Length: 345
Ligand code: NAD
Image (cartoon, rainbow, N blue to C red; front, side):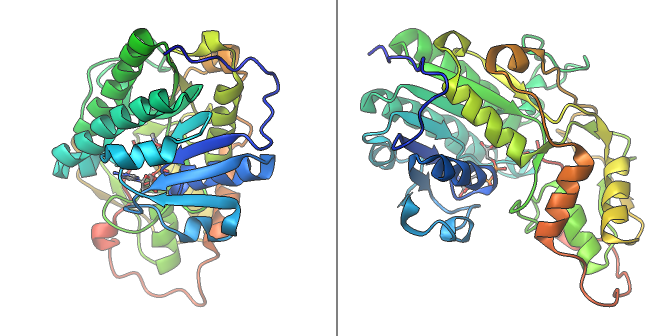
């Protein structure tokens, strides 16, 4: 089946039936907010494994939640029924999680993605915009990271996202679908979970500061990342949905446009929440890349994407959402145990 392409510019979102997989999660729920604001009819498919109903509670009946697993083909079919556009965000994130349980990451991120692509095809959806990751650059030490200069994946998570991009290529070739990938670089912002062993670095640092505990930095902290405020990631999704058909069939970098070391990030966050405890350094983590920064030329040209939120402003908005540290500061007891801040892929 050849999907008809979106050519309307700007895309008319009013009453447009869309599916957001993983819509109860961090990035997905912000995307849902924006789609509802634009007047789209939004359905979410989510198994609530790392996301939560709470992230959507403020939207009430404006969103239909289908509770289901992307590994379940019937659930994907229910999710995709009648939709014109799919935003596929559902996945098991985190490099360390994929090191602990590679099979689960591959099952959800690869088989799940194949199910979502197939359900979109069978439902006649015009386009799928799917979440890839900067981790696909793997062991390539070129900077900035440019589409077409990928290295070999360094973790099962990175492999799963590289396989998703291959799946997209094959589905486009075999079925004529419009599939467009977004390689997110360390997205952060309100609602990102600080809980658990796989928490990302930004909410992990905020949580440590709030608790009066030193944030844990893996290695010397001079590794760098290109942090992306969640509103920019959401905007990239909307631009990708409205881009000409010729932009489909590939994946684009989506980033904040500036390289920041983990030590700099820790300093910024400490200065925002007031002088918190000095971070402690732990062993470097296997599977982590040393430096990451995106070239945004392709996303700029094909999608019109440019980041709008600088790191300081994004962190301020995140700090407001996490709240200021409570009352008089408690005495530091040591690093934040197993909830140590992990770097998001
Ligand atoms: P998240 O964990 O907050 O969101 C993922 C959502 O998917 C959750 O709501 C979860 O419940 C749902 N989900 C997980 N497994 C599922 C399954 N089997 N069936 C149905 N739903 C399932 O993570 P996020 O940070 O919002 O990530 C969204 C997407 O962006 C993911 O594909 C992730 O790999 C990708 N990504 C995120 C970052 C980042 O920095 N946050 C970086 C690169 C790529």
